[in-house]
Amino acid sequence: MSDRPVVRGAVVDDMTRCVHYRSAVDIVAIRFACCGEYYPCHLCHAEAAGHAARQWGVGERGEKAVLCGACGTELTIAAYLVATGCPACGSAFNPGCALHAPLYFEVDP
Image (cartoon, rainbow, N blue to C red; front, side):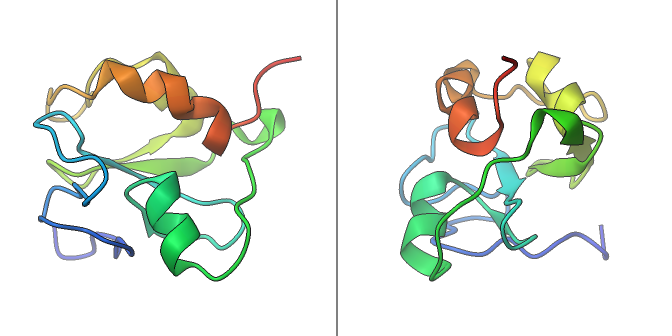
């Protein structure tokens, strides 16, 4: 995909894996609400962004803020939060990423 967003941070391959998370299913990058830039993970953002991270609000679930590293599809937050894999290409996402969701997205009150 020629218009694929740039993923910043300690990226180690073209599927958005980074030095912190690089298993076969670690193929998503998150667009951070604070800067609008994609990073593979919260640790990459902390190391490279130069500012504190901000979560996406509950009311922002329609924002495209998750990038599938396999095919370059951008998913809305709402779609990502219920997905087990990319709806466009079928690649599996790491189920363990759900543990980190509160680092990126406000949870429902």
